[in-house]
Length: 373
Ligand SMILES: *Cc1c(COP(=O)(O)O)cnc(C)c1O
Image (cartoon, rainbow, N blue to C red; front, side, top):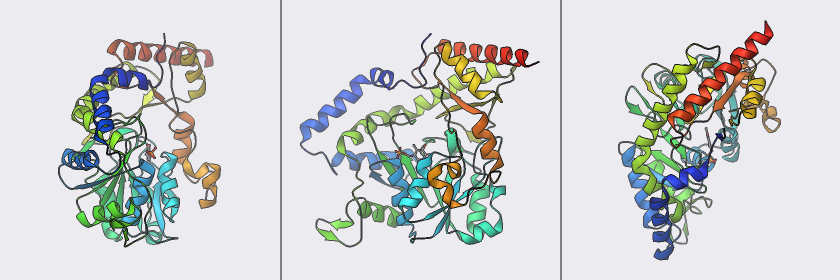
């Protein structure tokens, strides 16, 4: 058997006509940076989110940084970041000049835990980054209430949650501003790097349009400081081609995830909980097992690729220890990082492949269990 954790060549094969057409259209256009494709994608993606405004940019990390600048983050200001997330969430805060203040996650979902945000922590920060990790939305009612009570802004990191909803409201529309990544493996992926900032506040997005292009409000008119973080026309055209099938791709992920969930039901391999009212888009299918490393080795021996998201809480990473890490400070993130791993799940896999992975997983878990007793 050969089921890689991720297979981007399969992604291209399945959509070859649309992608080739987009690439050739841009090549022939003579316009490669800040043209019609980027503008059209911004509009189409904002429409996908139900209206509002969008600014394309170079990647998801800089989408967060640009959003923080647009919100007015000043050097040295503190920002809540979940202890369990992709490192770029925290990297973007540091790049923006801020200081990440890590908060623990819920042990059952892996999502930022509103109960971990005590009033003393909230008094010291200017805003909260809610990361919709693995494909489901954080408890946004609780986080919005905390943000309102403490006069904080709320930024959504939607890099893993394109199209996820909570009580039918789509991820990216709960907070003041949202950041998306279109890294090739995301639910909506480019064939290179790409990102986007979204908001219903037009002023914030106008600010991002300047910040991403040297701070220019018009050519050679640098009103404010800015960087180069543009979305190029080739990636924008590819993303326009893929956006119409995002909802269908997400449905397919859900369909495949249901097969895993059914098989796991009667096993000692646990999946993570889904919050009430959430429609999960399964960017990743994450499971938990106390002998995670052994189980991953057994699956690898059967030709099944798995991966860990993530092996360490961000504050425990060497580059981030200076932000106040101490063993035991983030117990849920620590424990999850010891036990979780991700199974292959992408729309191009077949039901049979998923069922085979699931069956082998529970058989191996049972064997491990028996050899322990
Ligand atoms: C992928 C990802 C990012 C960063 O996106 P890039 O496009 O790789 O810079 C940020 N946050 C989360 C949660 C991610 O998964």
